[in-house]
Image 1 (cartoon, rainbow, N blue to C red):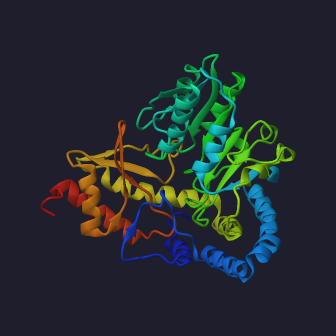
Image 2: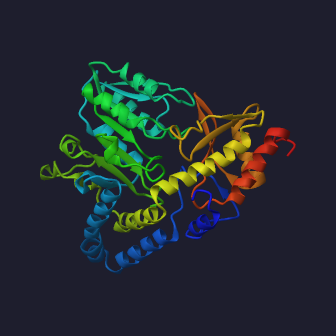
Image 3: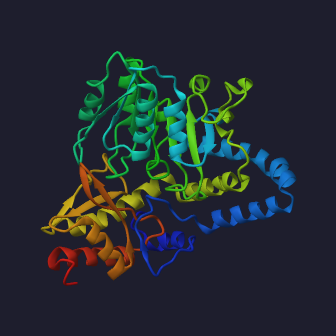
Length: 388
């Protein structure tokens, strides 16, 4: 089914996107299918009829059905699901909401999302905790080595591990369950950044066994922009402080993490339509298609002399995200050239351990668009970008 272009043409028609450009930065934020954007529009129109009544009395209560639908789709209890605005908010609830004392250590990699590292650095400056980081190979094809890298850095002061399910700069898939199982034997909770995993890879959150899992839903689920989700294992809810104050009677209630003041119900309700759209395609089918798209361009380019793939093509270690560098070419200049000459929009990764372009097509991307990208990159490999 991943190669059935007649089927995927139907999926592509579910989106209204600008086809005068090629958007291969869906890892940043994705367009929503028409069914989702139309649902949000309807809910906003209903809200605007009399917001204090229609939103608070009619729409907000409907969030409970959305909560139940998401929980069913990803194999968790509805009382473990809180809606947020993005992965940054979800994860910072965990990073800032677990009690830490001066000298306590938090452990993560050097490749985790910068905003999450910044959150720990702020606690380090403000409260005197210690942030411990370590690099991973690029790419990495040894799950046991990843587990050992975490395990050997756990001390009697380690109070939290933050890890990515899928590393944003390379698409590297990490062995979450193995790390969680190891950390649990040492009494260390694991916070998982699932921003690039949920609705990209096919899995159940429950099967990961983690304590906390934060995601953006406007990436691979195609939910409205400004929607995210936090999973907290039921027995961990009480011990996690919300970012914004909640009443003491909410201590055991997952909804305490949603206490952010007035915000539009329309966005949260649009999540339901995104979940339905995802399920109509099927999680396994969607993962296979996105990996097929990645493999198509990566295999077409890997024989070129300049090309260095920074993402493993082994399906155990990656999905649909791929990062590539063209040796001898400046990454930012290549980025600008792809846009100015070919109207191909990607994102540059410039990190001490990763320098390249991250390529993230999606289910609405066409094989013709992929072909144009391949042709442009081949030209850059063979002729450079100055004489193009």
